[in-house]
Amino acid sequence: MSQEVKTIKLKELVLWTENPRDPINAHATDQDIVDKAINDYKDKWNLKKLAREMGDYYDFSELPTVVYHGSKPVVYDGNRRMILGKIQHGYVNIIENDNIENLPFIPKEIPCNVCSEDIALKNVYRKHADSGSWSALERDMFVDKFMAQGKSTFLLFDENTGGMISNNPFLNQRFVKEEVLTEHILKDLGFEFREGKLYSKYSPEQAKEILTDLAHKIQYKEISTRKNRGTVKKALETTTVNIIEDNSKNSFIPIDLNNVPEKPFEPEPKKRKTKRVNGNKLTIFGGTLYLTAGELSNLYRDILDLHQYYEDNKKYLSNSFPCLIRMSMRLLCETAAKDKTCEDMDKYIKANFKKAKGFLNQDAKTYLSSHNVSETSLLQLLHIGAHNYTASKNYDQTIAISIILGAMVQITHGKN
Image 1 (cartoon, one colour):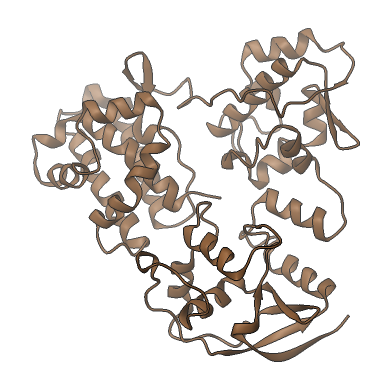
Image 2 (tube, rainbow, N blue to C red):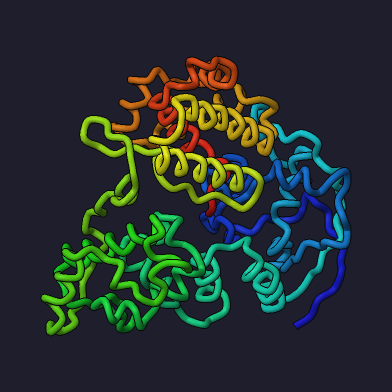
């Protein structure tokens, strides 16, 4: 166990394929990792934001942590900074459209903390485990893989349910891990783990129905730090509770949920006031958004409160009140564009509209189409809504605009 500061050529540093932020095939090259970081489909790397935060130059007080694998110096901590350096000096390639402006000056030789793998892993864990840069599931994966502490109930749940946590970010949070998907509560619901395998008192279909309902209640905050805390079963639907009670005397049997079709999550909470379209419920932003803390998240919550006030008091308000909600949509889009350095709303819309629309169900897409909300019309609608008093009163069109904007900001500002 040792560590020392050693200057290493940037070109020689090897990016870590098992970075908990976004692991990749062990045989991947630096170029493969950079391609993944640039595409950033999981919003894990945020290289442009890092470049802005670093300023004009590389701060040598933040040394990369490096472990030699034979003759290869592998970067265990500091991969994002080293990627920026490799891009700057042309050691890896990126297409022109992905260019990162205002890169900090990063020298071709970097002082590194060279140490044993044991120390490197401890350092990585200390810096990231509780800093918020890792999700609850990523933390448990790291502990299991690199620190030999075994698989947590949270990790076992994800592995035995076809990735229910990793596929639904609203489940991948500390509160859910520590107060909902615990050994005690799962057993109370009729589930337990034995030697890493899931056992339950139900058929696979019944088990999936129970867990899907549980996920719904977490998604729509029927179970949260403020509501039904410690009384999970109380929050579930009556039909779900009946399944649990009817099978309470059954013995635990092993079940496999990996191949049981995932029941689609509802577009919104059942109790929420909504606008009906062809029998399906659509509401502002298309449902609850889970955004990273910051100015945009604060603005989103303010708009929700404004909308809820309108829903609760519309019979006392004038027909002009929806204009305020409509104008707030432009402010939200401007804020998102500014935060992602897209220069203006037009570039932000062009960069995210198609991908966001792909996440919508057919009813939402039809709703957008019926109210003339498209990639080419959205910018104009936002401008008109802020200046044209009459157009701003079109409440249904405002909801349509909010649905696609909600999907866009979930991509660019959503929690991991």
